[in-house]
Image (cartoon, rainbow, N blue to C red):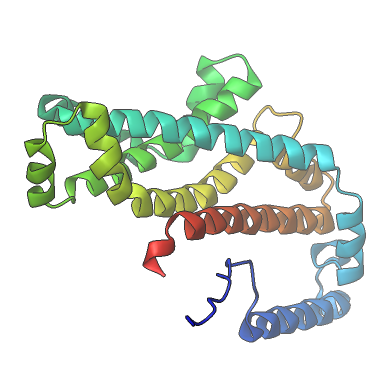
Length: 257
């Protein structure tokens, strides 16, 4: 009788003991500094106590979290679709790649702050500005990673596949897509972290909703506790999105286990 197979475990967001210890040490040091701040000549609001930070977290508005999360997800999906489409077109046409590749590198070299200023000067709508900045920053990453993955497929496999005379769609689905899926997931993880940082900066300019706007309000009120609270939310969102991607990756790439 064959041995009973154990159910495959799906990776979840876990915190090693070392991480918990590091967080505890940081919390103790921060709390100690908050009590010592007046004696060190530091304004009390500069280093708020953990109790004040916890109170600030309880006042966070879920609407702003949902707005920022929606902006990030929508922009990442648009960036992925656009990057994948251009990567496929550049892979099929060497001429197109020669003309577009330098432009893509130039786009990636432009600082995020410059894109934000361009968006403010070019477009009237706040949502379009934020979406434009996110797509123009994240899209090239998807494109370059996907194109490099397609180029790395062994020539022998490509020649063998073409010997069966497949259509372009069949060639991509049967050979290219399975080969580039691991790289696509890696690109998603990188872009999630990038998008979280970029959307916060973009929301600081002109937005009236979102976590970036709330950070701007906290800065105007000199509320370090609120800044700390919203920063904790951003980190939590990053961990949540990365955990979701990791879960999907585990299910689709079981063969690597």
